[in-house]
Length: 91
Image (cartoon, helix red, strand yellow):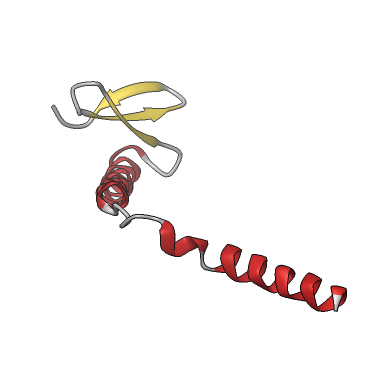
């Protein structure tokens, strides 16, 4: 009979632990939605930055040759860097 009591107690503990998640209140997903929105905006910004860089690189290669590199100033001006120095492409 003692073994039956142990099994009963073990089963009761398992049921209590297994159903403990029901004691939690409603979850607030608002913070997750905000994080998700920020992530999507960041991804769109990065994609736009990559397209801008690719377009600038293509223009620099056309104007200054295949060894040039597109860079952007603080004022968002495109500058092509070559071994010979900097050449402003657009103001």
